[in-house]
Image (cartoon, rainbow, N blue to C red):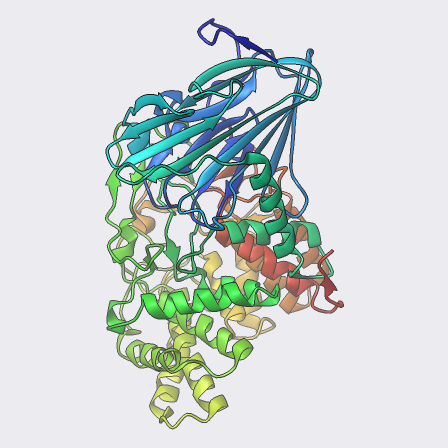
Length: 609
């Protein structure tokens, strides 16, 4: 191993432009997560939690906004990457004319650690290869340049309330943020980057080899508990690992995605912060966690819901912070250029203040699903279910912003009314199934009124389809909730007509758009890609309609939009074959998991391999 002058200019062999979204891999520790490109650049990381400020923000700007790149200094002929089986340990092989090196990236689960740590090891497989490690931390979302000092074998990067501690490297002394070194076959260099608030003692130096062993053991032991479907086991297992990585373990909340402002429209304004917990994800996540045997995670999520929405049910929000925070004020970060120029970059999400009637139904369904699996609900869960139903009985006729958080005017969105019906329906079902000493006759009347109004005002008999909103003519993929939520059977002629309208108006290269964007409806400019969760919903509805082959073909088409590691974004652009939106997207992975279990329902469940 030979050290080289890090100040000598040279080519890294890496394309310096912002890589495609699907070029990224995820590593995480159930507190936060990082994204790593095939070129060895870690260009997104928030510390100490998913919703904290980023310390690497090159994903939403330039290299000057923070990154940590480890790569050969000579041109890379090919980069091959994979997750180590049944783990979240990323392995990237760089193949060059001089030889092959392997970069191993992971974040060990806490297991006694107070804060997160990033571990990166470089191993030379064959030949002799010169490597370069460049750590450019820019805290406060790429804006704050830290003070860099060295002491006792540690390089300290401190600014304001945050501190990073770099250990390891090629010399055995305090590692330089920028270093070059040459590796021959069998050589290895390891780094660890720890975090702590600047006013607290620094973390201990990490034994990277031991951390790698314990991280592999953690994930393989966890994967061994999974109850996998008989079909599509590999992609379901990878989706479940991804979901596990999106759980904020201290609270049980599930972050929608670990990123903000990855655009739904290339270069456009549809850029949102998804580092929060949406109640809408509740029913999807509950089913997926229960089906896969992750009962501990399912219970933790139900407990998170019950704690988070405690209090006046009329104040129910569509989303909350990881710990149940209610104020998620939205601001724009003007110093960041945005992903491939898509501006503005937003932190926080103003949609938390919207009225969305659908959220009541989705919370009620999640609680009801939990009761089916775990038996009688705890008293606070029962009270919440009944309070939701009685509140919905007073507000269901109001207009709202709809399931897609429209930033246009409020309307009577059909899917919102269907969800309101579900909130009342699930409370009635629970009361009847468990013999609650609570009168529900008034709720039965409300349930019928909602049903009658939706069928009367939400259905366009001339077009033979339910419409996006009352008196409208356009369709919406959220209308797939009508059979999925049990409002009408999938074989009802009105549902069949609605599916036909969705196929006619919203299919793009076989995948499903949420709706046709109209500035007067959603209040935004630009188009967006096909929505992967909606495409999986159509898989479910096809299956319920008896269109088994259509369901399977569509599932495989949607699943094929995953990147080489099995990760899904929120949306997909079929024309340019690019992922769009925040990444990886828990909503997409939950929908994939549920669709796979439905397709395999007639087959024997297989134990995890």
